[in-house]
Image (cartoon, rainbow, N blue to C red; front, top):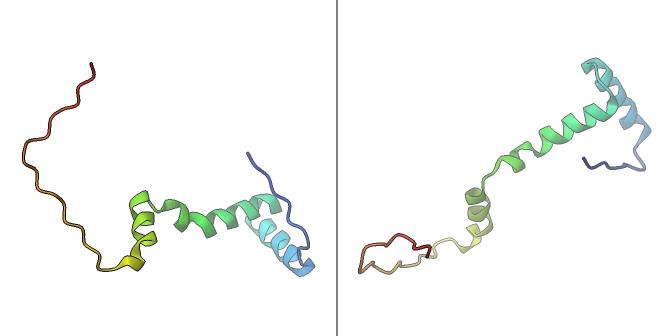
Length: 79
């Protein structure tokens, strides 16, 4: 597992974090982990297709004509 260090954390923010962690019954470190997980969950749950669609959304309206098949697809041969 990775770890990070957060420098120059405002004293009031640290106090609020400590109090929130105590209210939830766990350490400040666990509270930070949970906050980060909640904040990043929507980003982590997006599938590959959604990320590709988002990346190319600026090309709105571009259509590609797929060539017509002239023969049936053949199964792969592993000789």
